[in-house]
Image (cartoon, helix red, strand yellow):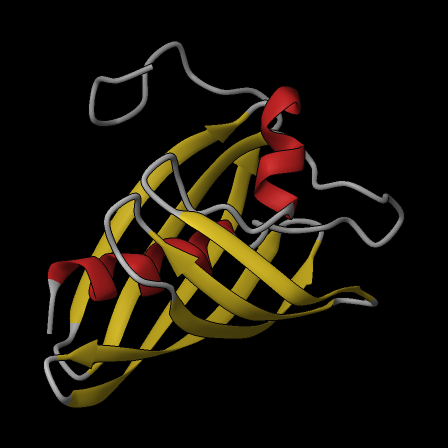
Length: 149
């Protein structure tokens, strides 16, 4: 399995939307801690803290994992504490990879599971990733824990 597929699954789950406040139509900007896990076939875990700025809200809601991937979600249902996405993601030089995500959220938390069917040669390998996120606060530190802004 390629690193692309594992990173895609974890990234897509992460940025499908950190949380939507039930009384708002957009996510709450702020400081978030995210645990991204690839559960199968090769388990990995990564914990990150990041700032969701007001100007990033639309990208986050749109399920765009990061600048390396272009994702399209023909199925995008977000509301009532539940999220469901189905579509595909790709890099500049790759074929689209089918992905689906389901999860639950509150104003300050999120749990998403993403499922990818990755092609490796002639094989199709199912990948299951999970992201759990919690909002740490309204304001972001000057620098994140890793020293970046």
